[in-house]
Image 1 (cartoon, rainbow, N blue to C red):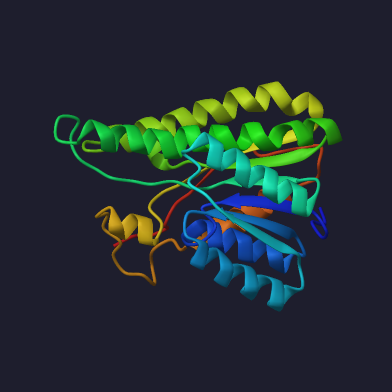
Image 2: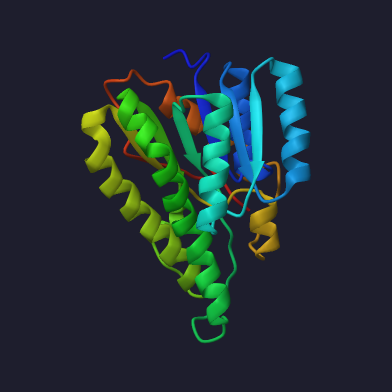
Amino acid sequence: MDLRNQTAIITGAGKGIGKAIATALAKEGVNLGLIARTAEDLKQLQDELGGTYGVKVASAAADISNREQAEAAAASLQLELGNIDILINNAGIAKFGTLLEMDPSDWERILQVNLMGTYYITRAILPGMVKQNSGNIINVSSTAGERGFATGSAYCSSKFALLGLTEALMQEVRKSNIRVTALTPSTVNTELASGAGLKIGDEDRMMQPEDVAELALATLKLPPRVFVKAAGIWTTNPQ
C-alpha cells in the first residue's frame, strides 16, 4: 500500500526506535507529528526530515505520562496536520531491579509512561480514526511483554499490559477498518537499553532501531484488508 501523503504521529520520536520509524516514514512521503520530552531533539529531527524529504513535520514536546500534556500535544498536532492515519506508540522507559529493591515511585513511573502514556495518546487520536473509518495503530511492546525475567517486574508488567491493551483495542476498532498491531522486539541497540544496563554486545551483530522501523513499515504497507496482529523481531546471532 502506498503511504504517500498519509499522516503519522509518533511518540518517543526524538531518539532510538521512534526516530528510526519517523525517518522510514518520511522516506515514504508520510507527513509527521513528533512527540517526545526533549524539544531540542524534536526540533533537530523536524528540520532534518522536513528538509531532506519534503514532507510536512510538526512536533510537540510533552511528557505523555501526564494526561494534560499528552492530550495537549495530540490536539496541537491534529490541529496543524489534520486527519491522522497512523499512530506509533513507541515512547517508553526502562529500569531494572528486584521487586523489593526498586523504589515504588520508579515502579509506578514505568507503568505511567509505558502503559498510561500509550492510553492517553491513543484515546486522544482514536476518535478521528473512527470518524474517518480507517487508521493504523502500532504499539511497540517487547519480548519482555511475552515472558518475565528477574529484576524486570515493572518493565515486564508494563509491556505485558501493553499487549493486553493492544489485543482488546484491536477487537474494539477493527469494524471501523482500524488496524492495531503490537511489535515485540528483543533487545535493540538504543540509548534506552544501554542506559538501563542491558548488555548490547557487538553493535554490528545487534538489532538496530532501523531494523524495527523496517518491520513497522512492512506492516503498514500490507493491503488494507489484512493486518499483522503481533510481530516479533529478534537479533539473529547475538554475542
